[in-house]
Every structure is written in structure tokens, then in C-alpha cells.
Image (cartoon, rainbow, N blue to C red; front, side):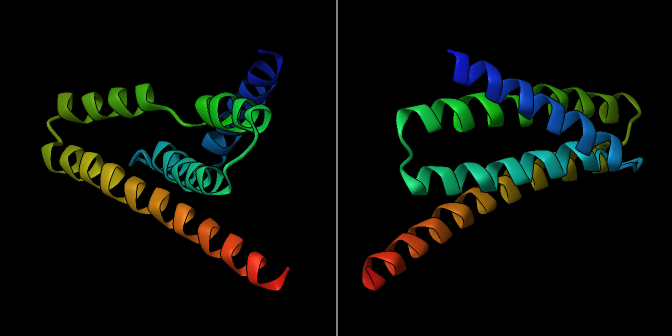
Length: 120
């Protein structure tokens, strides 16, 4: 539990400061955070981490770093402003690009591990 808590604390701070750094009218901060989180989660799953590393990074850090609730709230804000096309593009791009980046991270890590097996 301590690893999840420490990871969550660090992930929340990373999300907060990255969100402040990215400024735009389109919800770019949440998009970038969720996409990078998907990529790192793919890398992590591909690495088949120990339970301790999974609790710290997968559940703690990435659980706090990525944010489905903010994604949902920002989508509702766009709908309330009658920005239907932007809301639709935001939802579709977040889901599709998020899945692609998770798959990319997984594939990349699996390739790295296979390369290391050949070398060693």
C-alpha cells in the first residue's frame, strides 16, 4: 500500500505540473497526459514488472497521473458549449490514440526484451 501511495502522490504531482505547463483552449493537457500514460503503461506491461513495481508505477503513479474523470468533464464542457465537433474529435482521438500508444509501448518493450535476450 505504501508503494501505491507514494506512486500516486508522485503521479498526481506530475499530472498537475504538466497540466499547468500545457496551455490551450482545446483540452491538450489532459490529452497529452492520458496518451503518455497509456504509452508508459504499455511499456510497463511489456516489461512484466514485479508486484512492487506494478503497485508503485502501474497502480500508484499512472493511476494518479492519467485522468478519465477530467477527460469526461472536459468532454461535457465542450458539449455544453455546443462544440459538438470538437467534443467528438476529443473523445475519438483520446480513445484511438490512447490505444495506439499503449500498443506501441507494449510492442516496443517486447522488442527491447527480445533484443536483450539475443544479446545476453
